[in-house]
Image 1 (cartoon, rainbow, N blue to C red):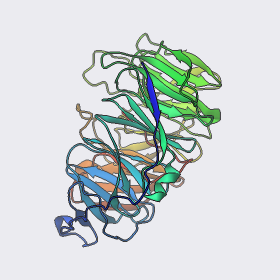
Image 2 (cartoon, rainbow, N blue to C red; image 1 turned 180 degrees about the vertical axis):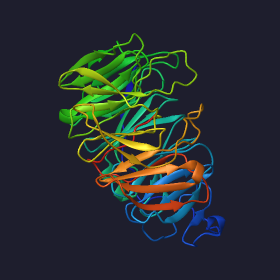
Image 3 (cartoon, rainbow, N blue to C red; image 1 turned 30 degrees about the vertical axis):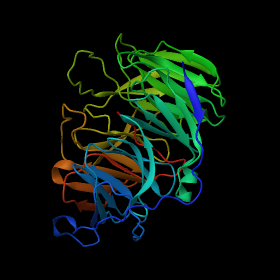
Length: 406
């Protein structure tokens, strides 16, 4: 039986955080690149960094200035870590071996706020709410990122799926919660709950459901192995893929466009399919268009520009800027050298993260990170880091373009 509870805010004086041990800077670089003790929540005052970026590497996190790309701090954190915007101007969500942890990226320190749970998965921001889905427990946690400024764990909403699975959830502006349905062996669709956690509707005609994105007028889509499932104005609509197996598992949305950008795979037997086609899902017309880019890409390649442009970082090393309404490639912006997606999804590969008019691209093989002005296509900053990076994210307030998840 589904179970839901409401979280309560922490009260009283917060527990004192352990003072972190400051180590020497990596590789003899600028001493501003301090390394904190592994996994410690820091109470040591540090200088703030403007519009920070956060990149993961094998052993920790790099925090960089979003304008200059200067490496300002290194935090040791073992394990495979993932990063996503928390939804305010200061914080980033770090998915660790034990659950979701909140990083004050502006203050350059891990906080004491944690949502514990096995296999922390998707992080979704929408309508002033951030939603965390723990695959190992099926638990959904919802909070207002604006409340993180208190330094205490925000009061929030908690919902537990009927069975644990690799899922995703999103809360809409009216308080409805859309959450996926499935088990460890099989995922089938999604349901919608009202703000009191009473089920409104469900649809189980979405095999292999994975990923989500929101378009203009709050049309929300989740991917299926045979198309997409769109929820809008209280109703589900299935949009079929043109192939019997046409998997859309990763999507990127924009509040300025009714069209969603998705990946597209057609070989269920492939150890790793390297697709060259992307999908453009029109949530108003409930139609799906396929566009061949002439190059492959990975699940870390999809993003949206400030005017709703569909952006794809191809293995040809270029950012493909696509008109979502026509499917026409408007331009290709050179970014990195040619690359190939590795077989293991946890292995590093070039990653695209977009914030406002700037595209940030990582080059793990060259231990590099660069910033590109999307309007001009010109490189505006770059940095060489001590180690090659894996995931890349940063602070993004409500209304920005989040990076999608595998």
